[in-house]
Image 1 (cartoon, rainbow, N blue to C red):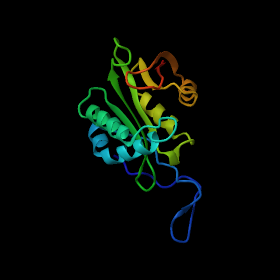
Image 2: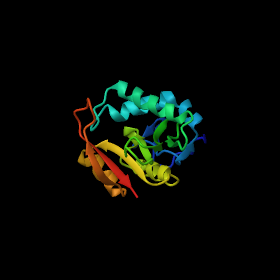
Image 3: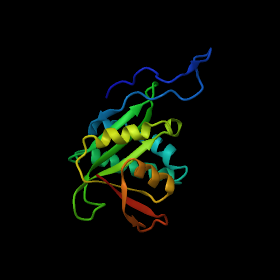
Image 4: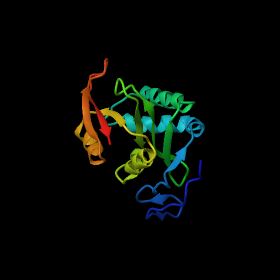
Length: 184
């Protein structure tokens, strides 16, 4: 894993060294091996809890544990596993995206599943999610699928990024509607 770069945002340090204004911009997106991904387990859990406990997900903190357990299980030897991440200047994990080939979403054909795209709330709305998305898909084989909540905010974001709705689902034991989306 490469060390985060110097701050790139426009921030003014206060007299005590604290940053005033917006959160510092994360460094470049870097590819992580499965081993490097697994080594970030605690940081991944904290980031997923921050991102998924609020709207639109409203997931419990245990959901973050399930997400990271699934991710680290795949990172440990899943052929085709890919993960990219960005780190804040202080070394904190700012966001990550991960995926792997699977047939779970299609039910038949193997497709690259964009399984996770997570950005810390402090870094949302500034293009980091798109940068992570693009870096992950740059080397991912086609076809590509993802499943996300069927809410305008998320569905619309992925549509702007070239995804289209393939089908709608309501998984067992979940009252929320989801969409499976396909990327060319």
